Image (cartoon, rainbow, N blue to C red; front, side, top):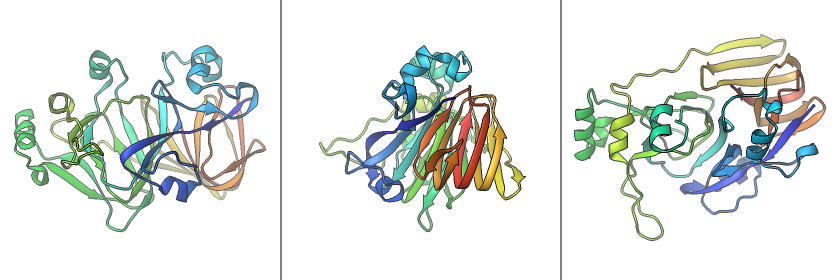
Length: 308
């Protein structure tokens, strides 16, 4: 039964740095590496399988041609994307569209996502939501550059969970590293980018018409209530479970045996141990296929697990 270990894809970003090397030991291709696409079947960057009978194939190709490994999921493309982001500088203020809007205008999925804060410097902040009460007010405040009046700031700490449904204005602040679980989409609409310029002296494109179209107004926090389950010395925390994904954190101390009836995306954010006798270490990313029914975990492991 297959456990697929994956080679991440790295993305250069104006706000990136080198912390992905310092924290996880990844060999980074760019001085400003902002994103690790850890488990991805997206056309803009698909993970490559590192082991077993499918070694060398992309996850995108495997999903398209061997759908039985993925419970014959009807989605035409691999539906989830796991990233680790290193915000060495503030990310742009942005918003993502829903499926209906993205499919119509971008030929891509919409993007509902969620974050687990892996690292945060003292006093680190995100932008999460806005104060506008109508579309007209949102447009006026953007046009007039009233960012401090419009945007809601929120302090975050290591271990926090942030749920970001489509339509939520948001931004990750400097000094924060997150693990992100999202719909497999690369569609982002920028609201504001602090008037930054790239190496060629150009500002990045904003998408203000689309922002007004897709932003949820008024903003309200839709974060679900967490559920915690105790298994002897191990803990499973369920952060969210909806039509887009289920995301849990498995903190294993000793041994934990679970049944599985669906393929799962697993990221090792700390510790080491084994899964069905396969060695796991910090920074590993893997998929247990739909044919893996028993999960036997041993060691001291901190895992983020997701599925549809």
